[in-house]
Length: 183
Image 1 (cartoon, rainbow, N blue to C red):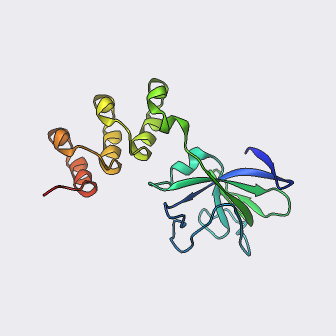
Image 2: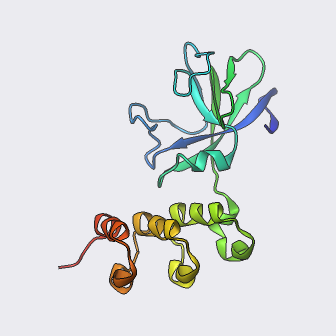
């Protein structure tokens, strides 16, 4: 993990996924940026979902759990802080961290056209899920079925009428659930 000196403390750089309103995924707490957060205790076992301040090691890992939310950079003090890295996982939990106001976004998701020919299928899937401005019409014929599923379920501007005859039943179901129909 990358490190930084923040407020004269050596810290890991980590990432926190929050909803648009800055509430956590359980929606039982709303955060404010530019604040320190702590908990009373941290589970030091290898349990995947447990108590403690839960964060991600990388931006890429945090995108797996983001669904039209926000990702913020955090600083995690290395000294005088309980930190439990969970075996073979991209997340960890700690006793305390600082939530910055720096919202992060993977450059290739935001500027996908610049990188399109260099991207893996997995990276293209992330674009289909997380970039609501993705120009899917330009790339429709080269998208995999799963990428098309992602467009149908996540792109609020999806033109279901234009593609209706090409869609699978699964994709039609997604399109009907995520599209506002006029009339």
